[in-house]
Image (cartoon, rainbow, N blue to C red; front, side, top):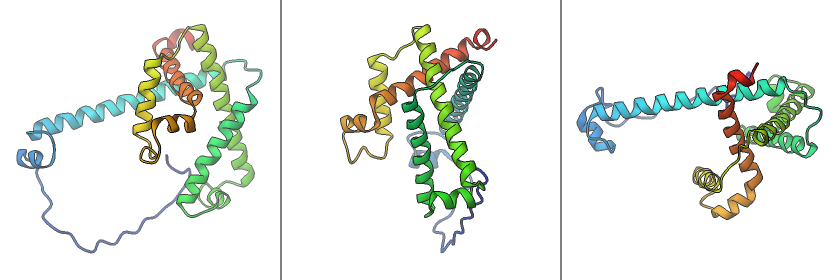
Length: 208
């Protein structure tokens, strides 16, 4: 994710370059450095991966937009306070980590990089937390109405995927990871994706 309004300059000094940079992707180069045998195979695989990534991003964007549209057009009287507080803490933890990476306090990051006052930042975080809590209410309501659920197989597959791609797999086993992240949180993420996909498939009927 990029910082809103952030202007960060990295200065890099190149001390020396060793070797000659190849100017052409040859079969020999591909064989020596990849699992492919020809440059054509390598390029085809790269193209497919790029197309898949673009398609995945497009699907995620469509799902998010549809979910947010449902939220804004729904009469949600209240949201679980515990959910709103959870999402507020998640957003704050995210910015704390970003600030720590820059060697800053959150208030300095907010003022110097995001160009917001502390009051504006606090309001934005609360708005994000409220939206996330509303999304949770809507997703669960749609899932219940449309009988959408997460199977044990889907959950276990996702848990393994999240664990394998996490930065803690070398310091804890998968059970400890699940305990730390929380099964309910993982289920909510999966349900959000599944309901989002349902809305994309049935968007015309739902978004009227």
